Structures are given as C-alpha cells and as structure tokens.
Image 1 (cartoon, rainbow, N blue to C red):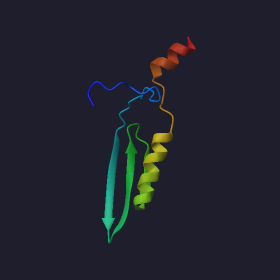
Image 2 (spheres, rainbow, N blue to C red):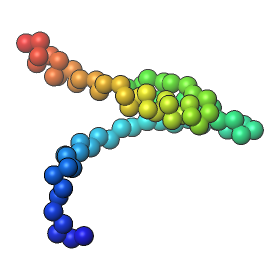
Image 3 (cartoon, one colour):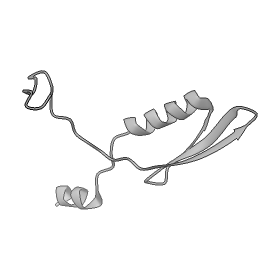
Length: 75
C-alpha cells in the first residue's frame, strides 16, 4: 500500500535492541537453562514457559541509567 496515509491511531514506536545470552540444556524432552543479560545478571529457568517468563521478567526491568547521566544529575 504505497502512499497510504498513517492512521492517527498509530503512535510512534520506540525501538530497543536487547542482548541476551542463552544456554539451553535439553535432556529427555526436559528443557532447562540460563539466560544472561548484557549487564551480567544470570537467571536460571526450567521449561519453555520458564524461558518465556525469564525473558519477559528481564524485559520488564527498568533500563540502567548510564553513569555519565547520573553524574551530571548529581552536579
């Protein structure tokens, strides 16, 4: 639909890249593993739903504020 007008109902979407390291162990159809966030936080999980819940929990955490911004605010 080239040239279609944007709907006023659509709002601007912010994009964010998130890096996670995923370690999976599969034994007898039982999935377990660990998700490591970019800040080094490790979270173990069990099962497919546990994997999804772990990722959702990591995404729900507020982003850390870079040290340079917190130093500027303190000045």
